[in-house]
Length: 419
Image (tube, rainbow, N blue to C red; front, side, top):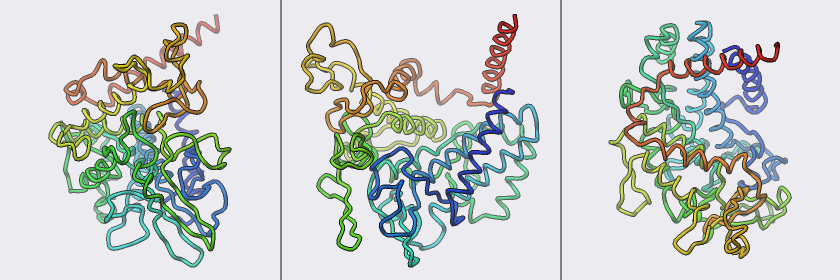
């Protein structure tokens, strides 16, 4: 527990830095640079914009909403031992609500990240003359808000009365803000009385999933693409004077020198963001249960619950590394030695990212730090079924037990070092 407390205090400093330095206009939307997604945007997001002005990033804002949820969970765990952390938990509830509202304010506006006509999230470009426009590129930028979805057990209200009182007062004072937080219809609770914090209402979730699960958009044969395949024939183009900036679907290596030209977020499959999407789907399934189903793939006529959707995405990701009916592993593409040589064909490399259409490994070949997540997927879905997840009590008591076990191990290690 002491380790968790020290980590929480350090993360508080980092969180405050983001709030104070990456939301310069105080709108609860964030502009954090390229955020590791390299060339996913219209412009080089780590440089000055050619238009002047600023870029409000849907992925950066979603990241901060997710950050709030993680800090809230940590604060609640700590509050089991010290009630003072209930106030910290309330702080992160407030921040999350403000961020959720900023992405789609009540009323008719044209400068929010959520586009009601399209049913998708986009970056917003603000120019020096005060205008604002959405950059309508369908990319992972607009899918990351889905990842800010966390489920909480029903016992929170009785376990933390001070927090419940503060939230009730906040809801009474700011009904227009709370109305934008999913599930956004009053006191609705989910399966087994669970509560949900999400940037997406049920209606928004359905609309975003229609893109996510469309094989002509994001759902590739080997996972979720970083850019919609729609942009292969419909590249996004933006003009600054006589200079054209465009974003087109590129399933493999980048065709520009941006960020060295050796990394590409305009089509390939990247394992870490796929992992965040799978996590979100499992959380949402724990809340909505078996009643909520979506078409997967879109327009296929097949309907799945969100556990089955997560399982289908995982199956496609895993198929990248497994031999198909032809005896070939998609990860090795057309490399004959790795496909046929008996000394090499079973030695799996964990590439940096993967071809959006055929799954061939691209970039660095030793990215076990994130591509190794595929082993976690295989383990989770090999041991867990939908019913087990749905009926498991997602209770903070479990987190406390694990924390105590970890703390006990650390104390034993310390004693061993002393001796």
